[in-house]
Image (cartoon, rainbow, N blue to C red; front, top):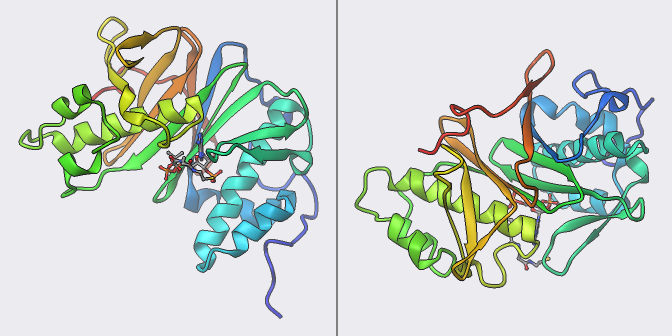
Length: 273
Ligand SMILES: CC(C)(COP(=O)(O)OP(=O)(O)OC[C@H]1O[C@@H](n2cnc3c(N)ncnc32)[C@H](O)[C@@H]1OP(=O)(O)O)[C@@H](O)C(=O)NCCC(=O)NCCS
């Protein structure tokens, strides 16, 4: 009989050595934690934590045709539950999510939990962002060369962004990645994703705050009081974070083989291309 990993029960909650101790998770006010997961490295969470998933999440997992993708989904979802459970001091399996009409997941239980979170995934890597009492959005994309730079953002990028995306420039693929991730991070924080009017929003470098910082406007009006940051996650991978908190302290938690490493994004990590 094939073992159904989606319905497997864990022997205990201490689970996997790769996960941080939930009792030590602490998210200060006005801080944003961004967890950087390598799908292959967190895959063991799939077998130890699958029991925390809700029936609809298990159903979603079963819809993946390839076992590896199914395992990665289960691992991502259960690590999300594990971390939220740690921040809120409750069991990961007790969490209930609702989904807005635009597809944004939100906490339904515990009621009135003020933890904001955002999820993004690209080939092999997942970002999970958390903060209290604000809107938060995160996006990660892997660079793809040879894309139709002018065509891909039609209807999504604002005229100012389109101007910056001159396909004749040698760095146009990097610029595309930067604008794309910023825009998705912002729109995910706002909750509508790419539906609505994405081209009404413009993201651009925030020269006053420094390299890797950016700001956003809506129909020409600056959106103030936000912390918006590029996240350089590897030579081919770019991320962006948007949080409706002024001057928030942002920490990246990167998984390495032995431990979770904490890292406050420095100029070098937060650089624009
Ligand atoms: C949000 C969106 C930009 C994400 O695009 P993507 O680059 O393909 O995917 P990412 O990996 O970066 O992000 C996926 C995650 O974003 C989150 N998400 C989905 N819709 C979201 C929204 N409207 N706002 C914020 N976050 C959203 C989910 O957590 C999702 O992960 P999960 O399904 O595993 O929970 C895109 O899905 C979108 O524009 N959605 C809105 C369209 C819409 O109205 N859909 C209604 C159908 S329910």
